[in-house]
Length: 231
Image (tube, rainbow, N blue to C red; front, side, top):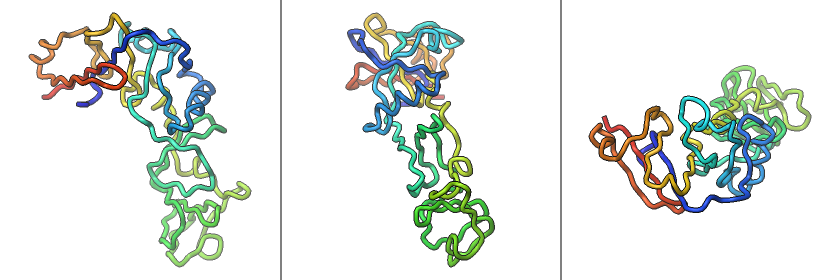
């Protein structure tokens, strides 16, 4: 794909019995994702209530079937306080009904590395926070300066100290980095505005004349069109 400036997928036959996704309700959000734990918590096609569809209400337009599919496999993992998480990993925590991304302070397992103030390392199943700059020879809980936190058994809360809640990234149906709209039947052959393209419908010829590249391909879920401004 050339990007997510504009994208839609058309397939025939409106599906039935799709899971309902309410993007404004964290409980609905988490229940949907947990049901796809065998697929990195990435759902298949989902249906949203009409009043929650950004393409039926708001500045993005009024052309939608209310059915969406993730733009890619999100690669989420289930939160486990005893796992040696590292910066950049994303986890789903059912207790707080949220998705988090580990920040730069989360360093994973302690393997004798030096640590800076605020670094978070896992040692013998316990997360420690460095409260000073510790040398590599300073072992958590034995030498150096560390905080083992109030949480019995697993140490400090690294979600609070070293992670960012990024649930809004996945709950925003207008975020084309996370979701693609599904168009059925009568939408075939049309160009439907999406993503950052806040305009009326264009045909392919006018898009090419205005320096937009066109990418057409046959996808396993239908027919996909993607356009991107080239200059």
